[in-house]
Length: 564
Image 1 (tube, helix red, strand yellow):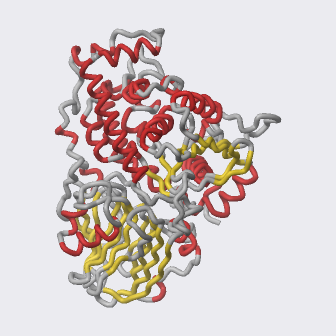
Image 2: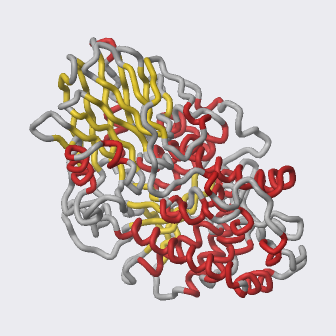
Image 3: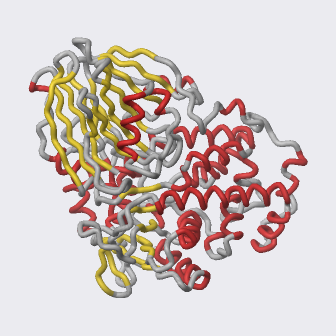
């Protein structure tokens, strides 16, 4: 994980001046920082900031990576597969070598893993940039005919927007003014090609990603299931016991095979995200001391998604290492006692008990992160609002702040103050969008049945990068920890999206909340031996942690995030 920034300008009026940029970029990469000024292309001034959180290779890398020919790469990402020898060396060096030697678009379209990148091809005076196909990492921009700012994070004093993750952008810097080509991902609809920018804009060649196809190719697309396809879901009532439901579902051979395939892909995804890192915690990395401290953590509400991650992580992580479980709670107004005993804390306790019974050899560090209203208000206005920016809604405020405090990893462990040394944080983002976990999915099913729900789930995945993943990336990495999202692994996504919606969720009246929503994930949890979380109804983080006021409307502008 890194912080990257490129500022291109004709005259000094276009140069960024706030010292806050350097601070924010440094926070993302505590192991290395660099600042370079140069002239590139047709007399364009450039300012480059780069920081590094060492997560791949046998030593800390540098930013930017460059050669003697003027080519350079600012890379913020992880290559999990798609390129030769990935996982064996620094992925930044690997990507740079491939981009220098081969066609940029052909290389980018094969990469599987989260990234935001900026690459300058000096031979052709061409700048390339963009985010991965899912939009898991942050990249912001401001562009006009004479100035360009690309940055991982930005203070509220600057005017920026999220770079759309709908394709890769190209700018010819041999020209006297900035204009742009956009190369969209081929599986996206035409609606995603409408991008408002203040420069000349043309649509270039489309990109085909190895893990994504047009939804028209799914055999379930835009149709209702035949009766035989959903018979396995029809034999239950609202009073059916969970044990009976999940045991019967596992006896259905086609569904059993799907559960096993999902299990295999989940194990692969979690393993890659745990093992792709140096074998040091943040306290021991400077001295390169091997330790059994927690190297990674899990954002842990005790709910379905996070408890599945914890159970699988137990099988992957070395048995002598502890695993940190971050559980965040916010002080509730008007409470005189047990102010932090919020729903996520209660569920966390119960799921921790079950994990401890299933895996007694593992040391689980249940980190109770308690946030007072005073601390929330102070740090939000002073700092967190810059990380949430350019998003400004009440929902962004609640989720961004909750995630920032959780990822800080500073709380109480067994009654004693504790700051987590983990450098990686596993998050459950994407599970609800893929497997139909939100209440809006049930409403869509009631109105448009399976065909409408299937279309909605496709759009949920296509839009998750725009809606919240950039924000989540900015707030977590501010602590020098890298967020990793196992549910949004390309291989897992490719398989899950190929499944009809009735294999991912069942929102018919006989399947109540806590059973029918995300029924495939609930079946996986049952298969793993988990019981408590398997039937927990969905509770959004902002309500489970009690940071949000349920009387407020999430889409409205937050007074806490306005410019200061």
